[in-house]
Image (cartoon, rainbow, N blue to C red; front, top):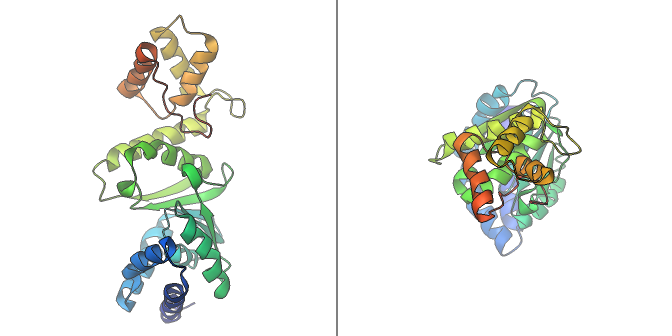
Length: 260
């Protein structure tokens, strides 16, 4: 599809969405999001971003599978998919917009986009499922206590050697978020110590450190602490272990199910 045809197509999809969004939360979200698409100039700027900024930054984008994490209405998810992806999954915590997504996609026979509601911060996809994840201005709008769940889920679904495109320029904690995401991803690569993923180097190091700090702990407690602190390192890790030892504060697990 050439540039002019794509702009016209986006305009048609946008207008249909505005006219057909259900009342309430879905309509409010659609109206708010599509203000950023309300002129041809804005549409062209988004197309340019996806073509020259996002898809170009992802090796092997042609024919790939990806996730647009925090996609809002998913309109941009579809536009990104037109750059050559096999399929892009829009993931959003707003259940109403994710239910609306298949309606407008079907209306326009758009077969390169899918939608998923990440209830409880869990991406409803298997591990190692996609080649890349795109995250744009999500963490700056997220409660800090949701960071660990989100970063661990992103790391979980990206295949080994996959790509993360991360933009969070309005978030003063962005460098810390990136550091934690890298740490969680390394842990995913090296092992978490649970039955489905044998102990890796980082897990073994955490177990050793916990035993140094608390030699009296039962082995199963040491193992659980090591699992539930996979996103922490250095002083943060020691602090979490001390909080457990002295106050019984259980570190929040970034994995499904929490503390077992």
